[in-house]
Length: 208
Length: 208
DNA sequence: CATTTTTTCTATAGACCTATAGAATATATA
DNA sequence: TATATATTCTATAGGTCTATAGAAAAAATG
Image (tube, rainbow over all chains, first blue to last red; front, side):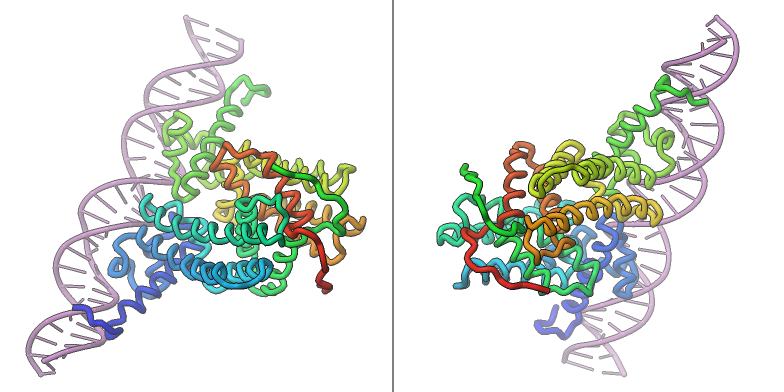
């Protein structure tokens, strides 16, 4: 019988297995990684890995979940909070990019490799991921309604654009750990709020 | 001796081989694809593929090159042209997203799988790719100097942000062919120039 | 200490994969 | 048509990979 507390090291070791798998998958991709690679990284033999995962695919599923769960729950807090639109936007970017820095491997794996999961597991993750986008979209809708944002903006487009910028910069951050995270957060926020143009002279009437 | 014109179908068949490899790599990733998959897609047997490629890696190299070459040369034309900053930005986005739609598989492979190439070939592609970013950066520098863009913007950041948005939307476009390309191009340009904010009230003095 | 439970190891079956060699077929040329 | 060249095929060597089974070692428990 499994003891109820951590008398056995199973939980801790499994977490380490997930982290190892994340690191290896992030570096070599799912199909480019072997179970031997993962096992070696955590200091056990190839066969022993199957004490923690039923299959390599299960490992991928756990890594993806681990990568996304934190920043989705952050998003829920941000969306429910009572801040200005700009503050929420900045908080979103901060959360997204911080997650990238802290558990960058798992998040990268979620972004790049989740499509190799079997239909069913991918469905569960998709629910999480589109929940994230949905919350972000709603923040934008609020912003439009409150008059902070222009009436003409397409909230679905906007949410995707934010995610795109964050992912692009997340990748860059991962490769270059010397970059100033806060600097990038500010520039992202500034770009999204104000654009690059010097002075707003005329406004195109892009109604749709 | 190889004839000087296309008396032999080698060139055409090789191009088809590259396209087949692009499609398969885009769907399953480099390591997830087998030479059998690629050969089957072009209607020949696995072993015959080696008449066109020395190795699977060579095929990847050709696909990546095929994916990027067109939009890099577009960029050169745009950068050298005599247009306003906004027109150049829009042309860049148009070229990037159109390339995605037309040769989407190869471009996706370039973005996602090029890191699996051996050092040497990756170097050649990197030269092309960072040439692209460099040109875009220079367009932004011109924009700042001419006073169209705010003095405070970081041109390196800006170029990466544009590429990030284009790649994010490129992926979405590939998955959903019904999307109106021109609509997205306009929204991207608008976002980058003007941001989302309703009216520019105060400007943060973010000098650095 | 003796016994049970947890964790890791070794060894291997069975599948698939890349790349090559040489035969076979198709196509062009004289 | 006879010959040369280009293209595709079959068969396979040699390697790696996933997943499993059962033994061994380590840790907990009474």
